[in-house]
Length: 235
Image (cartoon, rainbow, N blue to C red; front, side, top):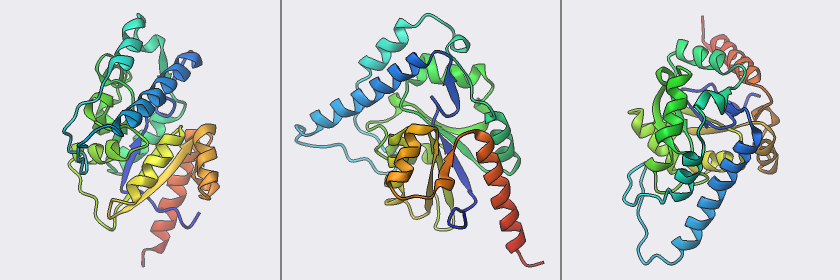
């Protein structure tokens, strides 16, 4: 517990973390396509004579979005018929907003016609200063570029004393946070929401305290760390 630091910045994944799919099969399909797109891009990157240089969110090559656009063109339902906010998400968001802790959303999914619609429909836009979707980046998670871009969009340049939390439900989320830690001057804390990311937390020998089985766990951890922080301040 003591190794986890109270955040100054919090970033969230979207699908499976901030909102959940009413039909789990669609979520599995979306995650499969995300992974497929990443693996294909990695394969073809081996044949590039010149690679785009990306430094903390600066982009030179736009990604191929055929697969993502196909998925969202097929669906004919409104976003509220496809996803719903995860239980407890508003409590966490309100807590962080009340503490003036800036937040961002980092997703491998498509923003236009999907991610931005979700944020608008569920009144979440007001919480996230930075919103990053697949069309905004050249390299998706587990590459840390989306996290860097979210911080850039939030107008933040983390310093050594900052603590960035990134919460996600997939292995690639945990790996992206760990990769970001290697390049940022601040502390980056990876947190798992759900089983898939939890396995990665354990594989990387990180504390089980970094695993949330509900967002209530996250809120309770934040409150506990805040109390410890307040107690450590001399009267």
